[in-house]
Length: 328
Image (cartoon, rainbow, N blue to C red):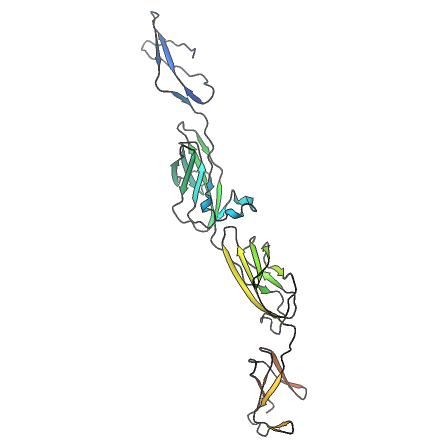
């Protein structure tokens, strides 16, 4: 390389290598000239390799372990921070071919021991199957790589959320304006319902088998109003939620829209009565008089005598609604 040195009296010598330039392989030879002027050249068999840089490793969640992969198009933040149901995730990445890859979990400063040490293959790829089932939580993973020249590099952090649960409460009417506030019978044909479940997730809303739409649960006690008025009848409103990890849940509410009361009200019998000339006569009222009739199922009966209300009670069932005259 053009440098000349003098060998000491004890035969020792040393030389500092100059800057070699680019990383790569270098052949080293030495020519020795003694005091008599005789020369001898020695080519060293071992190639000198200059390696001053290392590829930065990468880490990712394998697609087979990523149950939330389908949501990445609409949620690009999931690329670097995936959410999955998989409790034993498969981690993959790249590193310099043949380099030692050390894996760390929840160790931001990498001061502890790695939970695994593996080697990148000849193509510069590595993979690792996490052996223990992780609980639902947020985890951070990072890898370092070290090549044969002891160069080191560190990957970006991978944040993985393990999530195996979601929930959606049953629909609840915002205004249950029937006779009872809990009977799920309403008189207005354009009702609204509360949406309560895991926040920031998509909820599909069905009326019977008809899909009404999909909404994002962006706040607590979100209100959903039916897109069109109803006709009299009984309906089932169903919620279906799916979170970013792919977990699903469903709930439903059966309710009735009723604007008319067109069931005939009939008095069918008066216990112990004798009918004469279209009038009913009773003589024994010591035990009271039992009246029996029919009306709309589960309707509310008010009995009046000479304009005064004497009793109120829900009808038992169609064809067997009854009330006892309480005047005696």
